[in-house]
Length: 222
Ligand SMILES: *Cc1c(COP(=O)(O)O)cnc(C)c1O
Image 1: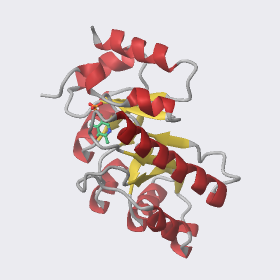
Image 2: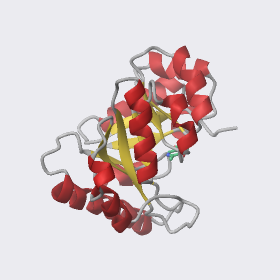
Image 3: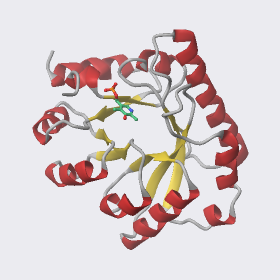
Image 4: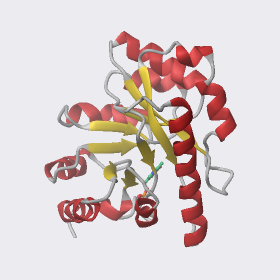
């Protein structure tokens, strides 16, 4: 199957669900991103800042670039002029730096609060109390150039359906709680980014609005 056929198959599967596709393009050369774009893909996810910054000028300007990997504050300046959504917001400090750098370009960057939902220690993200501490702070209330639009999580890499679904359900519960407690009147707060090549089907069932898919479209990364 070609990239175009794979993307068409995903779009068909997503029709009628709440989920949209983020094509995870990390490690792939620009020609393959162009192929994905030609097939209709408009949301691209990268996890390395320099790689995304190098690819961005090579693609049309209507691509929504999503930063999906951990983001160090000293790298924010390289993506602030164009990034659409930083899916890996894990600190107030990062939000403040995003705000500061976005202000220089008079734009607003979207952010998703990344939660730690997996059993693996290696996967990063906030706990619910940590997220609430950010949302209740005066520093957060002062930000004007960054807008939280939802939550993101990475489930345990496991074939155990009950385990993985339980983690997605947990993330959705965090989303629902934050929505009602802090974002009840914010229409923009509506994203639950969950599901990758191995588990997107379960994620869609559990209410994902953004699935992040790489290898199921491009094949295994080299
Ligand atoms: C690489 C990556 C993906 C995509 O993984 P695949 O298994 O190739 O679909 C999704 N989310 C994050 C955060 C990633 O780093």
